[in-house]
Image (cartoon, rainbow, N blue to C red; front, side):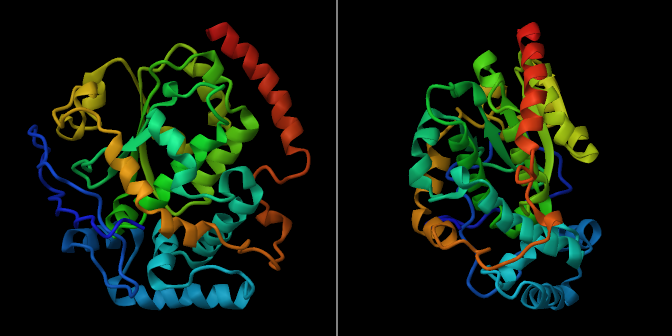
Length: 350
């Protein structure tokens, strides 16, 4: 899903300590995978995938075919990609468990139907205003573990700028881009969220109903491994924000949240200075928001093919257990009741 002008990713020595010198200039995100699958993993990443994901190179295509057969047998009307490259994302995200990979694939498509405000006409040109605002970017260099760093700056957004769902659209398109390289499928990603400037208006958006949907997508409906969430410059009211999110987080994911406050030394123990911009005490130059914006905007046609098509679930009958979070009867009302209580907590913290 990357532009053709992107250059291949440099190899990363997973056993080397991080250098303090900034990486070489001119770095670009990897280009899209070829139409016919060919493994691009280094020997080190092949070994890592075997150990962490139970991926056996000699059985890889057999496993893909098994998942493909499941889709054709159990959901013959599902309009989904069935190529090796696409299905491998779901197998890796669920450690090659066929049933769990199948569930993830169905969740992936079900989430689109459940949240049309996010997924209808989803393409980079429709979220250019989010990118121009500086709400998010991807740092140009991965960390020493080969993980790309998604940098979020929620304080840049104000409730009267545009609907909160536009931020989710920008995040989702970014994740779609990030998951293309096989390195990301194996290594996962890291999130760096800078809460500078976040006040009560941002803290009360989203409420629990939208927060549940966002968490459901990230945890259960997208084939990516989020390995750490680093929060910096969080205000006092972040306790109230996290109180909205935490009930929907799985225990393992909740444990991956690290709150640093304004302590950059704490941040550097988790993300080395070599890949951080000057703004966060790093040595990789100033924070550049334009490079990632260009990467997404250059992929317009690719996303039109991927998302601006008929509903892939049209004609597909799913059991109630497959309903996406937020489709359950009464869910919104219950969340609104919860939100009223949490809103009072936010005012108290503020």
